[in-house]
Length: 148
Image 1: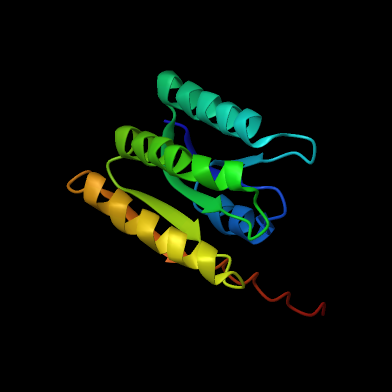
Image 2: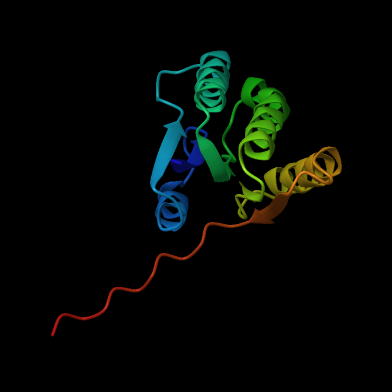
């Protein structure tokens, strides 16, 4: 069965290291990044539609990362909980054991607090499902080895 990783990234977020990190663990990685000209509601709708298609197709989503931005407008921060619930639901429904990373955007304490609160809430909702949730910062890119 095909397994995928999903990265959901708000405009202005640093998502590339998450994509690299998750790519090494599944057969493919899907990045759903907010476009420069895409409004909050359009982005949320696109992400939810794509997640719904993955679920309907029977694709196993074993891991995902949600990468928030400190510069997100209020409209998008209000839509985050719904996006995270949908992402959690797809992870829980498609894989026995799954992992959701919430990027804390460490330079923004308000984003960190929000992600911590969402992680706690989602963990409560996903109890017994095999979904684990953690608040992390982007994993460090592996160091390149010097050429010989």
